[in-house]
Amino acid sequence: MISSFFGKTKPINYIVLGIFLFLFYFANIFFQLKEQRINEVIPLEILLFVTLLLAVFITNLIVRTEKATEFNSYAMVFFVLLIVAFSDELVLQNVIFANFFLLLAFWRILSIKSIRNVKSKIFDASLLITIASLFYDWAIAFMLLVFFVILVYDRKTFKNWLVPFLGMATIFILTFTVLQLKGSLSFFEEHYQFSLGLFTTKSFFQVLNVKTLIYLILTVIISILVFVRLRNVSGGKLLLLRIVFLVFLLGTGIIFFTPADASPVLITFFPAAVFLTNYFESIKKRKLQEVVLILSIVIALVLFAFHLK
Image 1 (cartoon, one colour):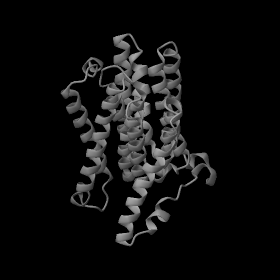
Image 2 (image 1 turned 90 degrees about the vertical axis):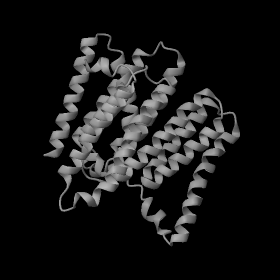
Image 3 (image 1 turned 45 degrees about the vertical axis):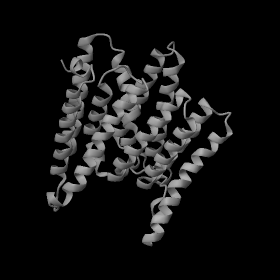
Image 4 (image 1 turned 180 degrees about the horizontal axis):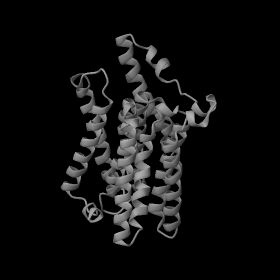
């Protein structure tokens, strides 16, 4: 049974998901090739695939170490299925790289709950978010998450509020230095455009396609159901899930600011996978779990097939 197989975290789970992602990622590349030769794109595509695969594994490490879910591989499964379902988004190469650094930042942010090395974690998270913004400008909006976590966990320490600015300044100064040496200072002006999609388009669906809209609505509904189920659970996990939900809300906000053909849906996959896993874990009947998981796989495959057409 599929649900039983992924009900634990074993090396075989990583291998199976890695092969699954490999097959669909490169099938997508093969069918999207036009006049380009495969040897022209393969080096970059391998790098992008490895980045995506690392993002899957990092997601599993985050949910395990921060106890966002139970000890299983379902978060990885849902993350991979979302990638397959939204394979049309894989053309946004910079978003893939930005998402990788954002995941590392989220990990540092969520680990602040231990109240150990808070300044170091805030600095690391700010550093990583700023690096992510070098690939995708709106990623810098996740700095709001850093300030929210400071407010929640250690707002009385004034130095904590200054650390994020130090982290951002460090990356921007280093980037400025490199660009100065290369004579490419126009990068900042050209890169940080901050499009305002929803406010500059005539049609709502120029910003959001139907598939993405349904996905966002379903994720919100599932998140609410998870919060309702956990309302009597100890505050630690509930607070952590609220932070994860804020990640999803910020990601959704960024999607609304971006045209549909450049929508960074990928940055919402981590929080979506966390809530999908928590909801899946709440299903007590094993047969029903099996049906839900098989249905999820079928939906992802159907959406992938439609994309290829």
